[in-house]
Length: 75
Image 1 (cartoon, one colour):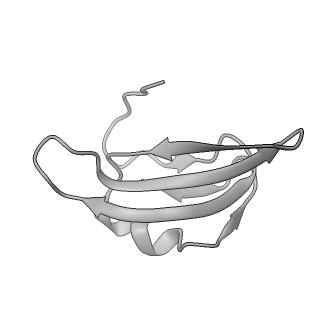
Image 2 (tube, one colour):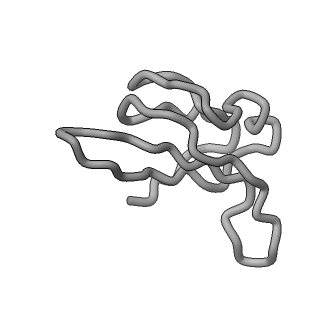
Image 3 (cartoon, one colour):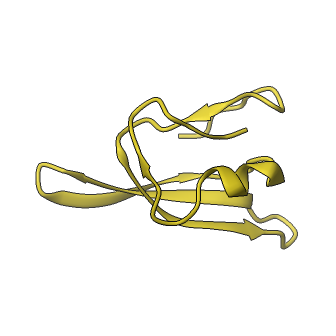
């Protein structure tokens, strides 16, 4: 699901999880600064992707960070 937000809006985790990866995918047409969360729900593992984040967001969510639903991931 794509959400269109005003630049600088805070982006929050939808579900609890762990930061799986955080990279700046700077190629033309790519996602830019991207964060992927790993979740486990009812014994199933799955991932959510948060793309087009501000570059200043990367230090906010290092790999391995545990997040709760509602935690700020970046902007």
